Image (cartoon, rainbow, N blue to C red):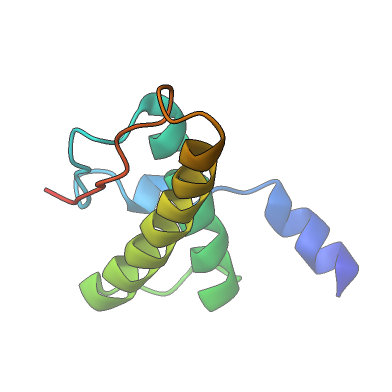
Length: 93
């Protein structure tokens, strides 16, 4: 099992997001990168082989979880440095 997880780390599923998901303006480049990586990991857990067609509902589920996780990270950062991490209102376009 650990070898499977190691091999999956070398893959990415970010290409399945392209032209299907558009993030709002509140996400910085670092936020977008973190959300993309989280979505990629969730998609690999849902379909390790990567052969199945990804439905819009499954993609939306993964993106919403990833955005919520990133928002929570930003909320914690905001507690530490309020001036640096102000905007935590993420959205999809």
